[in-house]
Image 1: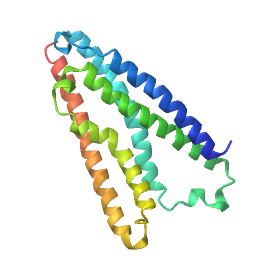
Image 2: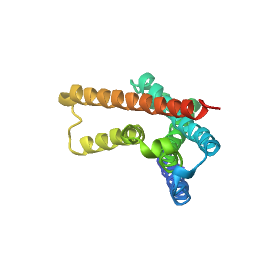
Image 3: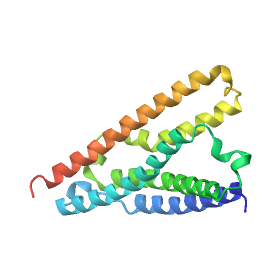
Length: 189
């Protein structure tokens, strides 16, 4: 199986499993969050922290992978025959699938199970979940439109840097919201 076929198979499995889990999260949501008890909210907050941790793991991998592999030497033809390269490709594909699944799952879990996230603003959480896909979509559209030229490279780098900074601040804000929610739930126990 080629790397492209492997990627397509993994992403297809991930999307099907993700849709099943996302629909399950949406279908089994608590329709009256105001009546949930503090122990229920505590348990749900811990589950949410697990979902968010599953999101932060591939996010960290992509962040460091992007910073340390910018020269692209690992995938050149000369180095292509090393077994490490195959591991890197598989590792990136699997973390990309985990990134997709866990980001949307943590968002859906937060807005359907936690009173704190159901009543507050969700814009930073949406930025956290959608920014990586926005970067990929803009890259594909810019390539298709012929804008990925050497003349536009500074503009593209500045745009990506700005989007990464917005994503990082949104992620910090969401983590702050999670810790604030934990503090409120455990303050009177």
